[in-house]
Each structure stands twice: as C-alpha cells, then as structure tokens.
Image (cartoon, rainbow, N blue to C red):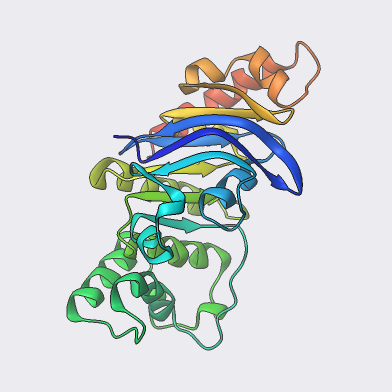
Length: 261
C-alpha cells in the first residue's frame, strides 16, 4: 500500500500555487520534487505535514484520510526535516533528537531505556556521536542538519518529508546526508518525499522524480525519463537547445556521486 496518496491536491497561500496534483509514494521509495524557486515544492510538503491547510483535494497517509488522524497519530507515521532553522535554548543535541520520541512518551516526556536506545541509535546512524552532548546552537550547519535528521529518525516514521535536506552544506556533508537517507529507505522501508535543488544528486538517490512548473505537476517518472534536455528546459524555463548540454554535464557528475553512495 502507498504511504502517501495525494489526489487532485491544490495548495497555496490564499491563492493556488499548485493545482490538481496527484502522486503516490510507496514504502522504500525516494521521490524527489524538482522545479524552480517558488514553484511550489515546499508548499506541497508543508501541506502534507499540516503546516499549511490544503485548499482542495485529498491526502491519504498509510491508507487513512489525513483529516481522520490526530496530531499524535500522524507524528507516529510521519516525520519531517524542513528548511526553517530551529533555535532551541540551551539544549544539547541529544535533547534535540529526543524530541522525536515525544509522540511515544506522553505529556511528561519521560524517556525510557528503550527511548534512549532509539535516540542513541539515530545519532549513531547519522554520525553525530561527537556532538551529542554539545549545545545545538554552537555546532556547524552541517552538524545541525545531521542532528535534525536524527530527530526525524528517532520518531520511527513510516514516511519522511525532507525539504531541501542538503542546502547550505559542504559537498561531503551533502553526500553523507544523502547516503543516510538512501539507507533509511532501503533498510527500514521508509517512504521518502523530498524537495531538492541540486539536480546532480537526483539520479543518484531518487527512484522517481516529480517535475513541477507553471502551477502544476509537469511530469512524473524515473530519473532517466525526466532528465532530458527538453524536460529540463520546460521545467526551468530555459532557452531551447540549452538543456542537452546541462544534462550531459549533470549526468556525468551524477555517475561519480553514485559510486560514493
């Protein structure tokens, strides 16, 4: 069964940004949303995570219509890492990651031995053991991104929603984060829906790609189907004849990245 099923979804801020979008995300599958800035990628993700109210259409989460799920129930099915920076006051990285266990700990937030095991496992998975006891606000952007991903993992979700998880990171941090995401999808059968700007990483990590432009979904397919000169020209409003050159260089670079993931 699909973990996300969006049907005729219209999203926006007072007026539609994306209209009549339909797509599905299955267990173990990584779906990449691509498109120019302002095209609506983040708007779709914020709507699925309830940061925005959908304008029309339906969203099913693990077979349940989203309106039927209480916030705590949704939090056990879906976790997210969004672009907005959080600013926790005087919290260690361990404490930030432990917030991922709140759907299971109840109002008092008391961590059991099993909760702590899951938290430490998530921290280890993203390679953040060296900053676990450090102040979250005193570590680098790359380390913070690892910690936020660990928090999402600690939630033990069926679905992960990631909004530009590699933005503002150095190349090695980008590859490390994508390697963890790929591992989660493959080994834990997590459905991943992510937006991404760095097209060179998409063929290396995505099972399918959703191209967005002009207020709607333009095309859905495997990377080889989407990454053609004509499609890239359409999605990014580029001059005719420029797409093939970009795709050629992009795919050559992507092949080298695939070897490292």
